[in-house]
Amino acid sequence: MHTTTLHGERTLTELDHVRLGKLLDEKSHPGLEALLDATEVVRSREVPADIVTMYSQVTIVDARSGERQKLTLCYPKDAEPATGFISVLSPVGMSLIGLRLGAVAQWTLPGGEEGRAEVAEILFQPEASGDYTT
Image (tube, rainbow, N blue to C red; front, top):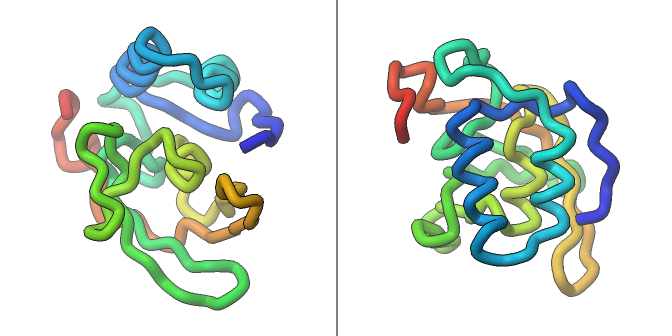
């Protein structure tokens, strides 16, 4: 995904930022590197409940079809797209991490197809439930 992210458009917890940075140590990923450089980083206990963090469960609404889909944002090793667990390194995952409720995620799939969807609900955010270490 090649979009410009302005500082403050996305928010990551310190823990998510560190763990995502470790993914860069394993493999080059220019989109992730740009995202980490451009995000606002906050302590896990201070992240607003309306921000998509790692292992957040969200409902997105496709901008074209209006179709609703429930997704859980996870690390690559836990990804199971058929059950709604999408990797943060996927185009959709990269577009969702750090967004605020109501924001519109945009992505480009490897085949060139473009997608847009609104973050319509945050059904679960680990930090909002008191889990600061997942």
